Image 1 (cartoon, rainbow, N blue to C red):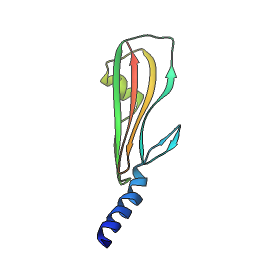
Image 2 (cartoon, rainbow, N blue to C red):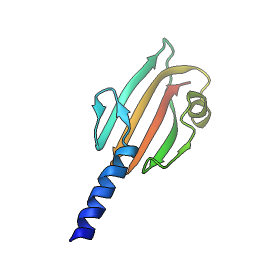
Image 3 (spheres, rainbow, N blue to C red):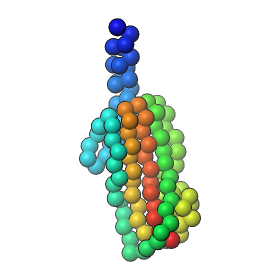
Image 4 (cartoon, helix red, strand yellow):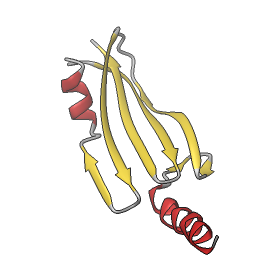
Length: 100
């Protein structure tokens, strides 16, 4: 029983390290999309660029606007959004660019 309690405590403690902050605050479980920028341009193309965080120990990925533009083959940006998914010990933050 002590091992189970220790495992739960360790996951909660380390999981807080992987919890992303959002405009709505921090939570162990989060899934939000936040607007970052809107321009006068229009377009139907969508590009995504993501970074992941595991246990707050390892973060990898390129979530830049430039990477999202490249992934969506976009030259004129219409909007930029940030999508945050956090699940206690794993988090993913993505930049979503729309345009033409």
